[in-house]
Image (cartoon, rainbow, N blue to C red; front, side, top):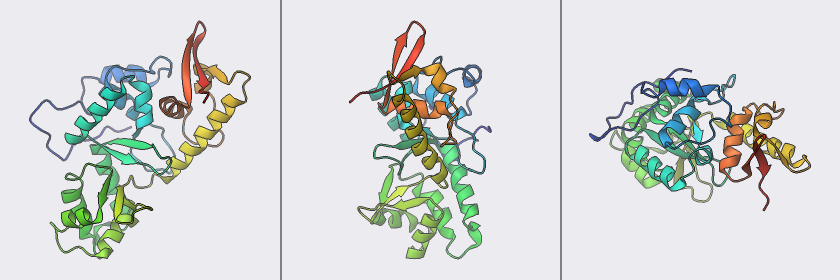
Length: 273
């Protein structure tokens, strides 16, 4: 997997948070990439957890999506959730990463390093017809004025048009181009609000939903609704192309599965209501 290039945005003069292309943690990450989930379930450092999970992002055929981390996965990896939330806000302000609201669940959020997001944007623009189509100037406006200025998961239409208008006169066609490229999705409840989106993420969200159900179904069929984490991690899923480790981190962080230490190893157990 290629490492992100240097960010296009300048960071503040204070010490910059470590990003995936920093070298000081590479030896540690290389040692942990192939390690079992049980050996690398929790960390004390939010950025190290993000870097490792980025490196372990599933490689899927015919799915051109840059690596991202689910916020639930981060919660399963760093026990102090208050510190995680504080770190995420800091990383967002420094434009090291972005957070996205996902359509796969009410509380589902994805975290993507800014370098990876900019690559995803460029690829989405190219796939949508590139910058030669009528109205394509909006893509440059979006990259230059919207992405670095609006760091929330959503933006209202008035603010969106205001930021885009720094580049020129904004029309409905411009907004439609951004939506067709997968860069924005309109909220169903309030059509004047748009979610920032990760283009071409649909197949992964489908795999996420199916994988969650398959793992929970597997555990529910067990007599005590539990399995050794090491055994569960090796399970090959039939309904989801995502690897089990990716899904287990998510299910643990979202509270659907809890882990219990035993003499034989870490157990993964269905959380009873």
